[in-house]
Image (cartoon, rainbow, N blue to C red; front, side, top):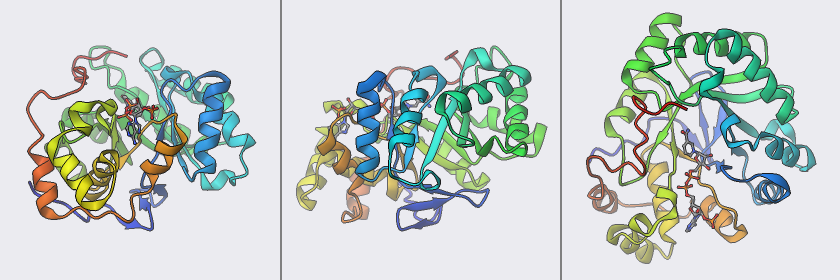
Amino acid sequence: MQVHRDAVRDVGGTLTLNDGTAIPAVGLGTFGFTGDRGVGIVSGALVRGYRLLDTAVGYDTEREVGRAIRESEVPREDIVVTTKIRRRDHGYEAARRSVRESLYRLGVERIDLHLIHWPNPRLGRYVDTWRALVAARADGEIRSIGVSNFNADHLERIIDATGEVPAVNQIELHPHYPQEQARALHRRLGILTQGWSPLGLGRRALLAAAPVVAAAQRHGASPAQVVLRWHRQIGSVPIPRSSDAARQRENLALDHLQLSDQELEAIATLAGPGRRLWGGDPEVVEK
Ligand SMILES: NC(=O)c1ccc[n+]([C@@H]2O[C@H](COP(=O)([O-])OP(=O)(O)OC[C@H]3O[C@@H](n4cnc5c(N)ncnc54)[C@H](OP(=O)(O)O)[C@@H]3O)[C@@H](O)[C@H]2O)c1
């Protein structure tokens, strides 16, 4: 495996996007964190040091994330909140409306990072949706714009149409599905890769895999820390989800850990074709 160490500038747990803004090296996924319980989980994560929060219209967790931000003692400008546009809001006008609705639900004046959640190629409106994000950024509603689950063709189309390169592409990424080609393309284009389901949904298939457990034992770390450190060492930003205080802390405490080239190579043997978690193929998924 080719190990890439300088895809992005990694200074003290912060990375720099192609628009010059900073983003934390690890975030918190919020899928399923709804209601008062969800607010409590996100509030706790802010206390424990999380500064990147990943929500989406489709998760129905924007209100919870917004409330946790407002009730927190962490200065608003220290928090990067990400949300995403879903299928039914594709198209220029609908996407502009979706951004405003997200601003309202989050209760913030500006969204730090706004993504197109899936390209929905059969719907065929992702270029206009991208134009809407470019315009919303120009109007000050959004700081950074990006995409999620975009493959090479989708990226090429939006860049050709607008000249605007996404700051981020958030894709399925874990040692079973390391997306070497996509990451190489992102490096060439100056796009930061974010990894969704970075812990492989916390399943044993990944966290009990021999190379992961061996590295964890060698370093006195947990298997999840080894996997998250792998993400950082390949230049990607993982957004692990945990509802548990101890695991949230564990997932953020990665600075003491440095995987060797041999350990990275052993972890690379876990990759295999078709090892997506649930078949989230951007050419096929419509949501
Ligand atoms: N853009 C997209 O299309 C897309 C798609 C999927 C997900 N996402 C985003 O990515 C985020 C993360 O992905 P995900 O939620 O699918 O899965 P994930 O983060 O890979 O795994 C979450 C699971 O791992 C467990 N876990 C967390 N930390 C652990 C640790 N240290 N040790 C053992 N188990 C641990 C959690 O359980 P506990 O809660 O009990 O700790 C939870 O069941 C989502 O929440 C969402 O924000 C984006």
